[in-house]
Amino acid sequence: MSDDQAPEPEESLFEAPPMGEQERMVEAILFATAEPISLRDLAARMPHGSDPAEALVHLRKRYEGRGVNLCKIGDAWAMRTATDLGFLMQRETVETRKLSRAAIETLAIIAYHQPVTRAEIEEIRGVSVSRGTVDQLLEMEWIRFGRRKMTPGRPVTFVVTQGFLDHFGLENARDLPGLKELRAAGLLENRPPPGAGLPGPDEEPEEESTEGQSELFED
Image 1 (tube, rainbow, N blue to C red):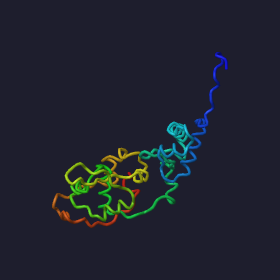
Image 2 (image 1 turned 30 degrees about the vertical axis):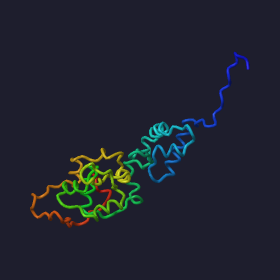
Image 3 (image 1 turned 30 degrees about the horizontal axis):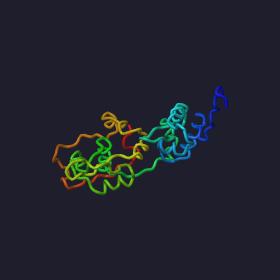
């Protein structure tokens, strides 16, 4: 080869597909996956050199205003029915369960104060939290154990799960409704003065079950 001849560029066997094709790949994966999928998992399924993050940006823009939207849920992504069309799917997606007032209060405290210990939950509620209440929320996979606190005894903490965020269409816990919305939903009520007929510190209040996971934070 003479000095004035430039070397031909080598073809890469791992060249990433065009961005349009990457969008199609991400779209196909999201439609085939029931649970939200992380960016890392998307990258692992796509050809070497792909940029799923950029593909998601284009894809999200393309689905704006459509009947199905691309939503970020925690650190993952999923295709979800547009919020204003949710009523069309109500029959197929709404699952009625019974949650006691104690479970609703415990869940709300965890959502707004996470990471929070059992002792902190009891301090906020003013009564002890039964093991059954916490177990129910754990079994529903709406809460999970968080990191231990660096305090005496190193108690475990509780945090809400991605499943909780997904159910209520939240990207993160910062999107939870404020005091105004909670009052409008009837979830903030005037409590009687301390000691006025309230159960003792070792008692769980016996109240009628309250229906509906999906009614928890609705307006």
